[in-house]
Length: 334
Image (tube, rainbow, N blue to C red; front, top):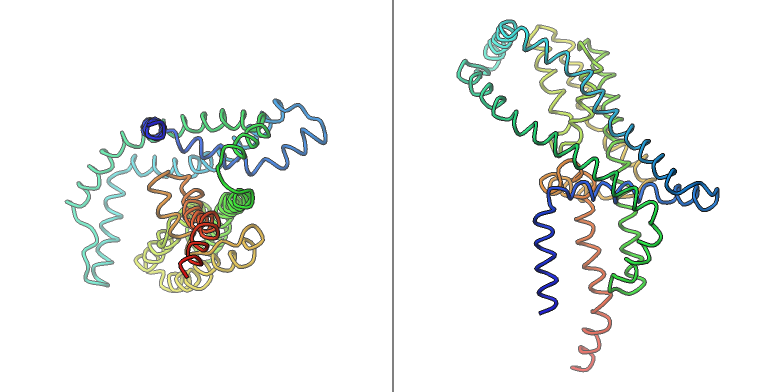
C-alpha cells in the first residue's frame, strides 16, 4: 500500500508538472556543466557561493539569449519585407514555380496551396505565442532551480547518493554516464551546429547566394533536425539558383553541399566531439527523435541521455541481480 501510494503521488506530480519539466532538465544540464568550475571558485578561491551562482546564471543568460537575439535581428527584417509586399512575393513564387514546372513537369505552386499555407500560418500563431510564453516560464524556472542546485550542490549529491538503492559501483557508473552524455550533447550539438552554419555560410558566399549570413545561421539551426538536417536549407537554395538561370552557381553549391557541408558533420564527430564524449551516432539520432517529441528543444540533450540510461540500467540490472541471484540458482540447479 505504501509503495502504491508513493507511485500514485509520483505519477500525479509528474502529470501536472510535465509542462515545466524542460526547465528542471535544463537546470540539471547546466549544473553538471558548471559543477567543477563552480566548486573550484567557491572552495579553493573562497568566492561567495550565492554571488558566484548569480554570475553563472548571468553568463548562461547571455549564451542562451544571444542566438535568439541574432535570429530576431536576421530574420525579422526579411519577414517584415515579405509581409509588406505580398504581391511581389506572390509574383516571385509564381515565376519560380513556373520555371520548376517547365524543368521537371511538377506543379510547385497554385492559388489553393497559397490559401492553405496562409490558413496554417494564421492557425499556428496562437501555438507560437503559447510556446513562447512556455519557453520564458521554463527559462525562469531553470535559472531558479540552477541557483539552489549550485549553492546546495554538495548536500544534494550526498542525499541522492544515499537515496538511490544501488551498489556503489553502479551509482558511479550511472553518474559517469550521465556526465559524459550531458557534456557530449550539451556542448557537442551546439558546436556541430556552429561548425555547419559557418561552413554553409562560406559556401553560400562563394556561390553568390544573397544574405549568406542569414542562410548560414538557418543552416546551423537546421542541422539540429534529425535525418533531413542542413538539406532543409541548401536544397531549396540550389533549386532557386537553377530557377533564376544561375546554372553554374547551382551546380557548384550542390556539389559543395553534398561533398563538404553534408560530410563536415562526420568529420567533426570523429575529431572534435570524440574528445568531449565518444557517443555513437545511432544513439544520438534515435535519442534526438525521441527527445524532441518528449522534451522539446532540450530533447536534443536528454533524448540521447534517455537512450543511454536505458542501456546503462540494463547493465546495472545485470550487475545487481544477475551475478548474485541468477548465477547461484543456475549452479544449484546443476
